[in-house]
Length: 130
Length: 197
Image (tube, rainbow over all chains, first blue to last red):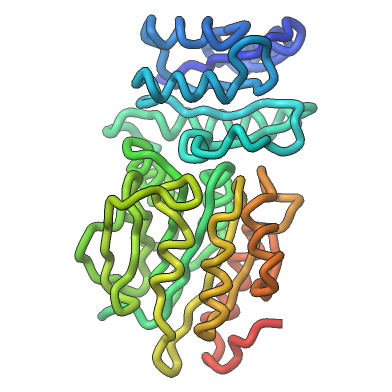
């Protein structure tokens, strides 16, 4: 079974647009409007691909990733930035190892889907076929 | 048989997809390929397994003390720095992070020694944030090797390839599938053709 996708973005319209796109492709989606909500899903057992915005009020994307790592929730997840920032700022330093990809908005839907399917395949159980 | 030629690939964010494109287009080479991807323990074996499913050469996580063999791909495990002893034996060390990362591309590339006559060293820097690998390609150039960097358009983050380019030590700039073609070309010609251009 393919792993789930979590969309973390403070903008309702972005979150809903991405959710509709991915659900149309049969992906199982969870959404979070910010870092705290993202951590809540992880504490509740979410494991899958996390699509993370950077610029969010309160905890931004980098703060959220730091918390994910420090609280021990990274294992079993893939983190992909989905952001309007053309290039990452220096807050990413030290987090490179945990960020598998960096996709900028506006994104190409086909490319995003291809990437997500690939990252889902990485999370298949050891005995699964990649 | 230990490796005659070494291709060392440094890569970070955006790397899984870039490596997928590179290895999908790469036939077996007369070289040992060492990948230093910024990655934590727990994700490294997943990447190795994924690459093994599409690459034309066997892919394994590099193990401490093992000798490199031509026609094989070695992925540096997360949580360690990888160096090569005598351009052939893998050494994994836990030391401090370098350039904020572990494994560090600079640490791995700077462990390479000037190759014996007719042996070839090729450095490749793919997508990623920061400047890890820049000192590495400078070193590879200094010992007579050739360097290739990923182009801006295909890079998820054009940090590491740009930093490598800024050193003046990069010979070629291509997207991943074209890097594969260039590797084939470089490794099929005589060693004295490896002067860059």
